Length: 95
Image 1: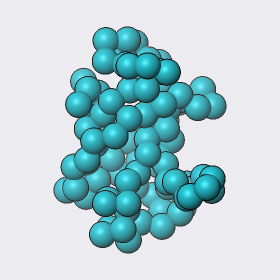
Image 2: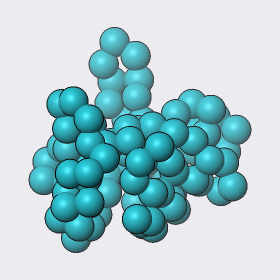
Image 3: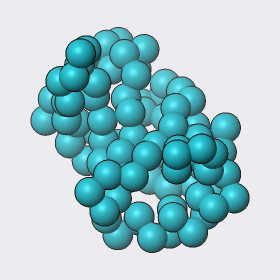
Image 4: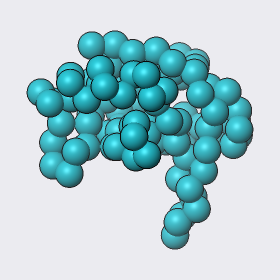
């Protein structure tokens, strides 16, 4: 199942900075249903995502009534993505 959305990049500053896109809340229920088949421990959902032609594998997790998609440095750095940038992503569940 494939999903497309746009949202702003945000940062969580833990021991190291991590960058995420929040999935629009309207998609969360549809993803929740589909994720039952592909989810693994602790509610992690494997995905293959693509941003501006760069494809990568990661795992989404639930947060604040939706899901968050981690944006890896191997995508963010070459595309010069900054916090608050509007980012278009295509992703499919399962890896």
